[in-house]
Length: 584
Image 1: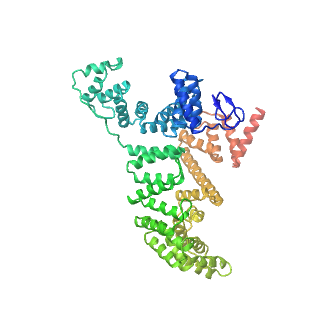
Image 2: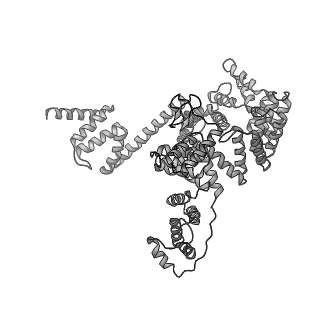
Image 3: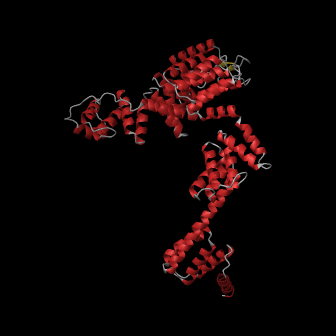
């Protein structure tokens, strides 16, 4: 029974909403404690339907133990109608809160709908230490061919006296599956059984004279690696609670990258309650173990001012520590702080100094910003664009200065000037080199022109493969011209191929190898090569290498004619055949 605190409804519980006022039913902590006592009392008196209703109520209130128990009732049809979908839902609620048994049961039921989800939760439940999951996971790993890891989970299951796992592991040691053959180990496992099952009696008989030796529990081949892979999958699938817990497990195993990620999860409140103090503690712990990215994240936190009060001094301290550990983009960020001047007094000289430090360490972003501040190269670029028509020579000089300072948009303009001869003597090779430099520097807008160089041999040799590669990338980035050029290139390739196929066919015909020629001409038919289709018709009409079939020949002549093949002999022959069909 349930009572709605809003409208006063008292009656059976049907779900989280009150049947009367349709509002979500809530319970106070005291009412929850009372409900737990009612459940315990009902279970003592074997009033299981009443206990099931109580678990249903508390499951909807978020109590993990009730979610698990109510899901089990739904799965078995115990005191409630059997409903596997609802059971999955409640198991999933508990599994998201890292309940190992619920994760395992959910994985079993999820096999009906999603193999990926089932696989993840099975592995995750085993990682959480669910004994029930061990044999099922071992069987799955064995099916997938991972025998070494399968043996590990069979051994864990055997340690809990799972008969099937004991026999399976004995057989594996006996046959050397996933491990070297070891008859004493096989004998040790068989001795754990009071009476071997029928299918293992023959093996037990053969081992009767072998002295048993305890193999112990084998080591996991790479538990940390498995946790990392699980964490990646949890993140991809959006299982935030599991992702958080896996990162915590890895952090507890001294994985500093996972500890850094765990800190960010606490900072964002992903899969856990947001806690900035815990976040900073974890990030700092990871950072002092040499994780530059953790220092960077701490700097970001103190710059943004969203989670803690903005503090430029602390932010700069953390960015400097990140830079000292090799994170060169931290120099750029520090330069940005001084260039913008929101958190500290604006100091362009200091910004340039920091950008130069980043550039010296190889950070291209810091280098570009330093050059922009020093030379105002963008102004030269704008001036060059304004003078392109009125004064091409001066325009070229402006672009040359801007590009010499590394201003990326100028590279494409330099290329255009050399290719067209605008303001400088035409030099297509130089134009190609400028486009190559632009693309290598990350100018996606130069991809189309760069692809044209390969597709039309501008400044470099024609290169079909390279042209397709570059133009395809440009087309994916939205260039219609690149798409059209690709179509033209592919059409030319198709025509060239058909020309070669037809030429090979005619060579074979001249050698009177008509059957072989027919195969080439059939390619012409599939790809719409009119002359090849006409020639194939001739082979059918005159029975060259194939049985005579004038009906097929007529259809082929018709097809070639429809494709605009107008050889006088072909037209005359088609006319005669049409007359023959009409009056014959």
